[in-house]
View 1 (spheres, one colour):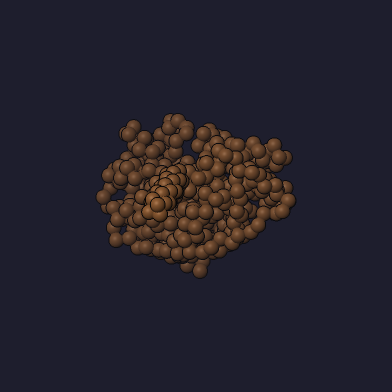
View 2 (tube, one colour):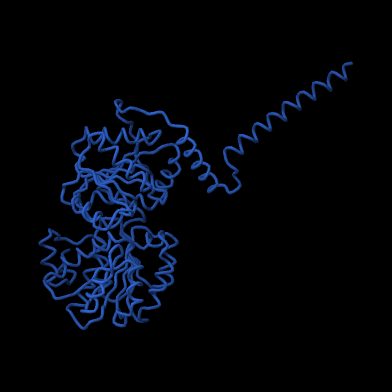
Length: 436
């Protein structure tokens, strides 16, 4: 099938061809005709399979050309990075038309964004918070919006956007088409679909939370963070194919610490992205990574979605994500656009629980390998061991709310042993009394 078969006009096909996009993906083949027909849609497809174009193409086909001052389509996404990524897709797609758009996101002042809106726009891509902020200034009319897209909807729910989404919904016209796209479809997202969409057509091109087949996954059992760092340094020093690597950590402090350790070990071209970084610093780091000037990008899950870099060779899970759906989104940064990639996961004893949950979610096991014998294995510090034990206790309480914790179990075992000892002594005394 071609884009012409999907009734996409030449003015939108030519920019796709210029980018080397000539064949629709499965989600595009299935979603574009349904969306073009005006039906509400729930689209579930693994990360990196072209979901953005699956809804952008029918939207720009519908609005066609610049008209009036008020927007006619709204795309809501969870992060600034994803706003900027979709904005680039829009700019590419409408380059042969006079269609106008605006990207609304925080981290910068709203003045320029407001000026763009007042000059007239046809399409808005925004984070929920910034959209509501500008709407409150009474410079934005929603009366002409006929299509609303919720992209990466599961992430929006994880980030607590439910009240804002509900608020935005109340400001939209009653008669409109709504599209919901995500790689996973947990109960939280089902709640949005039930509340916002009217008899939606569900399109699921792969089982939920299935990673792309182009991504090779591997798991390493590692005792602690210091050994994880040693293993990563060794791989970067000895594996030339690791030329564009994304490393995911669970906290901002860990991101900064790991980046410093990599640089001290002689690994050059390392950049970091997390929410404490300024907007310009984050954008510059991402652009340098895309251009191949940066070899290693260390980040939190804020960047697991919305980074569309075709040439990411490897994704490294320095820490296993506790939101298990995030694993699929993380490793979806590699193996994109039918290219192959590798996802490496380091797992300590406190992360076994999360890996098993991820494997259950994907319905597949992650193959395990041994570290190279030359990687130095550090002893686990007392503090880190305590942290691991606390996490294991937390996991046990999730599975069994009556679980009191390892300390309580140890205390109970000591008490039981003492009672047993006293019981034995009492029995011995009674036996001696009877003997006498």
